[in-house]
Image (cartoon, rainbow, N blue to C red; front, top):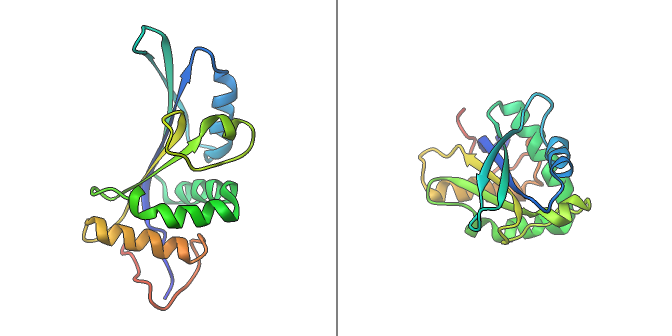
Amino acid sequence: MEFSFPFSSATISTFVHATEDEAKLKSLLDSLLPGDVKIRGTKASGHYGNLILILAAEIRKRADLREFWDKIVSELGPEGKRKLLREASRRVSEDCFLYLRFDKQRACEGEFVLTDSGDAIHVQLKIAAYPARREVALRLVEDFIKSGLNPGASNESAEKIQT
């Protein structure tokens, strides 16, 4: 049976502090996002009154989601993929989201590494789980990752997601 792509939307965001290069971070996000997805910038004030720019984008089209997923997974490399599978259970929330954080500084240097740090590129992927329960969402994500992180992979034990 063919695995269906388990995500229905994604939000990508990062904080740009006054000491960071806004253009570099925006360019990094642009390189990950499908062509027609636009980045929004929102100004905020930090704890000490310092200016923070929040860069964010939303992806809702399935084709764009697949393109985005393929880009971030290819950037992770083999060890990053294994780490993603090992950590899936703690990265899937009760409300059926997969939360990923990529080390922002290392990403700017061309290396995508999963992190728990707040200084990160935050990715929130909504899992299309039916019924919408954490255990269902986790199984879908783990099966999908095990399939080789390829939307077209097949596996006889997989359940097809209804879209």
